[in-house]
Image 1 (tube, helix red, strand yellow):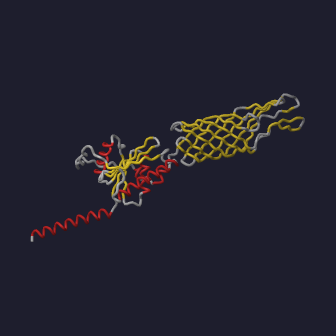
Image 2 (tube, one colour):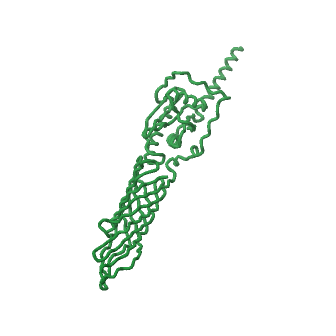
Image 3 (cartoon, helix red, strand yellow):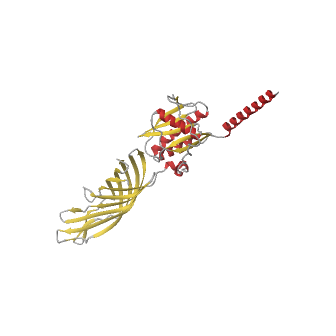
Length: 367
């Protein structure tokens, strides 16, 4: 009789335990932790969260140094991290140039899944976003496989005994994730910080006043967003002499205005953008006459409106220095007509072009 009671009690305990396990399996998500050792790791994790939001899994970021060392050392670190957090899977990234290695481990079954993806640029760039989405889909597949009980990858052969779980006295509390990582919405990974830049170079304009065009200096400064660049640009032309055998005209040109452009292509160090600008063009002129019958006009400054499209190609040599070439077509409204008065009649000699091609080459500093 007593033995029957004992068996009944053991059966009830077993049933209770099984019921708890079933409810735990069905009642909430299981845990996967991701080692976050850089801002880019945090942005990649946000992409994975976005692609895996429909799966019953909690993705928890664990800031810390990258998992380096031999494969056996990495596996021991993975097991220790999973034990400390009671996690079912561990995820981490390793980037070298444009190659990104995605590691996904399930310590319980000793499976390690590794894939190599191509990731160009920095977080926020278009090519980076495309590569990050591909990485997120790879991780989603690995999470679904673990959920289904068929983890991806190869079984890791453990050559040495794994370290014992940490005791309560030595176990450390996990370092809280920095707010800029865990509070960042998924869309934030598509943006980059505002960046200031300075441009210094030379410019040549085919203005129609002289066949060789007008040369000068280019100075510009502005701010660059992910999809827009705004800069204040100043063009200071060198003095140009326009002789015709009867008079000498000295012509100076100064322009300043606001230019805006947006990138069409951003791939690695290359940026190709298109835009337009609007500004004020100042003509300074003075005339010297060689004949008594010709009356030279007094020196004067003539303002004109300058506007038109441009396109630029930039090649970045480093994070701080780049070269940029620009081609533009500037429409000039209010340009002066150069000439002289002879016996009471105005004789034109140079009228200039209404649309002026402009070419510039500049050094770009990105502090």
